[in-house]
Amino acid sequence: MAVKPVTSDTSNRAFYREVDEEVRRERMADIWSRHGVAIVAGVLALLLAIGLGLWWRGHREARRGVEGERLQAAFDRLGAGDAKAAGAALTPIARDAGPGYRALARMTEADIALSRRDNAAAARLFASIADDDGVAAPLRDLALVRRTSAEFDTLKPDAVVSRLRSLAMKGSPWFGSAGELVALSYVRMNKRDLAAALFGQIAGDDGAPATLRQRAAQMASALGADAAPQPGGAAVAPQLNDAAVAPQGRGAAAAPQGQDKPAT
Image (cartoon, rainbow, N blue to C red; front, side, top):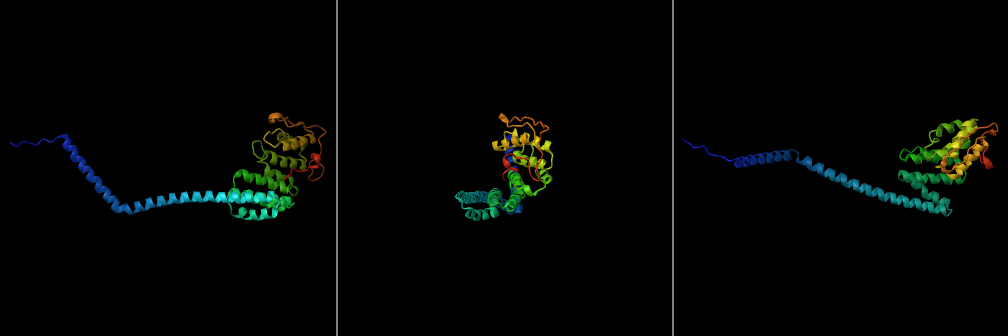
């Protein structure tokens, strides 16, 4: 009678492990033979994309540095009183630079136009910034306010209100500047109660420049409302009285010190 050989669990595990490893090697060889070229191409494409991304980031940062230096050089020329040379330096930046520097260059070009009393040219430059989707929203909003200020004397008051209504609200970074233009338009529309209320809010807004707050308080007072800049930005609610000042002709806002619209 034959005796069955006795196999240990260790021998069985070793045998199964060898079989399993052989199967894995065959599978890997099969995958490599069928997809090896695609795998290599994918890895190379990934490395190329990473390399291009790093190069583009470095190129973009270097370009920003150059644009910043060029813009600073234009500012230096403008500060030295050479507006012509500054304008020539700003032109390529306003045309070709990235969104931020492009907007700043055009804003400066608009300021130069305003210094020449060419409000139409300034308004066109401000409009090009406000309509540029690549520019950050705060800069676009500022350009819209400044465009409206440059065009203020030629716009109908309801057009000013419609254009700036969303910016002439508490919480807007341009509340003071936009609110002043809207309030002056209310005066031109003979809506003195709305104008006085808005001037009163501006006078009590500690986020607005002190000169703007003081001007708003004077306008609210001229319209018969009790409003004055308060410490900490607390506004005194405007109260209209019977002595409210009526608008004095088209475009006049009964502004103190002969000022009928804010400086651009």
